[in-house]
Length: 349
Length: 284
Image (cartoon, rainbow over the protein chains, first blue to last red):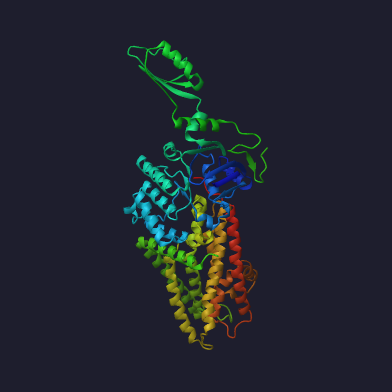
């Protein structure tokens, strides 16, 4: 059963373009030029209950905007969406009691008070029964290992500890859907790992639906079976993590370990040389060329060992993002980074 | 329909958290209380000096020293409540919009205007309530000995005075939240304090001072368009009874104040909702 249904959802913004210099600032008092930013463009998406979906994309791709649309923080320009049967931007309390949004770069706890005071406020706002509050609070603080810090002012916590407190606050009302916007940003590897472990455990136990945006492939690889890649406001891929490599990587990494005394010679005819430290050589070879190249090298060299691997996921995704960002704008729809518009919305000649 | 009890409970939690936060910075809290009370005392001193030179504001207006001090105490009541409950929140509202932190308010299963308006309480501003209470008690004692027409208290007045004080608070709150909401369209709005100062300046004196020359259109504007003149004038006039018998326009003005309060609240709600529909958050 689809718990999140999105059809043709779009969001555009007008952004003021301030030219350089004082004179331009004076001119800007009377006439301004705007750019139309199409942050999200007609996306379609369906997420079933209990799925853990990663939203990947370069900066400015539209990931966070999509999460904000689905959580009702902003209104769409066009299209429709339903989450658990609710239209998010109607901001019905019945909906807002059933989901949570965690933003790694924003803080909702009272800065000068211990986190427990913010938790109690959340209890009142969400109308959580005392027994459920204590049960959830105990479970979450135990899992995240933050119980001894509950009575320490938030401003005195480390970034990782603060994020754990933010997560606890967001989950106290036991939401059915959780939107996570870069929850591990800026954290050290230990804190990242702890939070990944927590999410995996919590999601397995509760079977809640989670949409995660992250730039850390480790988060994604550890948690999500399904990956949605969004770039320039459009969904470019929706499938498994392994499928990304199949679809977007046209090459394999082939490593040859040559026999003692065997020189590698000139291997550039077979593919791009990634690394050459004799007696070892790593080559990037086009997928369809791998059998032919392997046969030729094995025939002409004494080879002690050979391995064929997919390129690292980060590399594939980075290539994909670069390709998408480098693609020219679609003239009929306007660029994701926009066309200049004057104050009344017409295109500047 | 959301339960008023639930909202009261949340308001209590906001007040509790704010008090704990204020108490965490003891020195700052005490200095703020002391400066508020000192400012109040200096004001009383200044007007006490002025009333050594004149018996009344204007001719036959009835605003003598004790009557004016009732007016002043009423101003403090209204301002102390507005500054304690709404000023820090209205100021922060602009910042929430600019930084995109309003997102969190929109996620909560509670009326967003309520959340934005009551989130923080400035307890130190409430110290002026004590000053106001003291000044009111002293001036009423003086008015009870007034010759002629000593002040008598009736239960209706004792009920109406706090009611109209709350009407005044509601009118000022409406102006403030509507103004703060415009930050969503403007991106930044630093005129809040300035505007507050201009508005409260007009409401700080008995409305009789606007009865001559160009004061008439000004008085009409700040009574019927932006009704800040009724904020203090109506409750203070009810209690101090500067004119005996009462002026014929006093009760109609009191009736108008109820209409103005309802209208102001409805208009500010409309502006807030419209502004919220245009909210675009900030990139993270």
